Image (cartoon, rainbow, N blue to C red):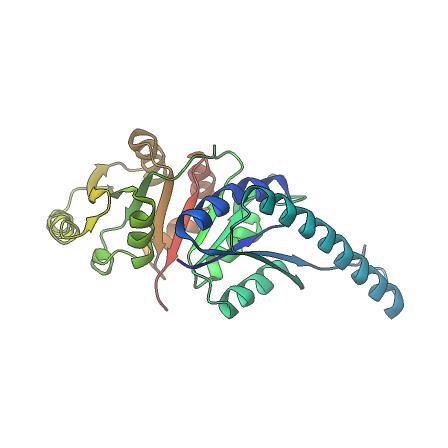
Length: 279
């Protein structure tokens, strides 16, 4: 991972996520691109002349520039050798962020899960949810409740899909760069012969991978409530980062579309790294 895009709206949640962006940029020796999208929205559908709209847009740009410059100064004071740059884009955050990440060939998008003015619907009604849904790039989301600490243990949740026998290469690269332990977890809702055979296959194939921290760990737990199982095992394992891959029309996609499950997963108070199946 050489190019990290950190998306910010300058909120407290974004500043919290910045700690992870800086940690990863330093550990991976990657360049960090700080991104902000701004736009002017007319109030209450009121008609404004072209001149007034232009003035409002200019003011929005000046405000964004002031806040971005202040943020960059703070970062450079603590990380003077970091490869750091910034970009401001006028437009809707999701569209502009995804277009920018594609243009710079980002290896990872990092963002908070609750922005300025966010209501109690929180993460799953926010910009970050839309980015996860539509991005082709891995996305790291950081909830405000996550207590920052260096990433030393990765937990990767799998659905025992045969196509998951090859773990995301970015996951392996991240584990090696951080010298972090990696545990692959499957939550089994019921015992099936096919699942037992797949478990043996997973253990055999994943056992061939040697990480800087040692062998990949592999665990299977049986639980009807998958999100609660993830929360409980994350705590037991001491995971610092929960990772998974979304597959189109798969179990995980259905999981991510359930609002109650989304809320439950947030209770884990863990950053989440989402990979996407190649389209």
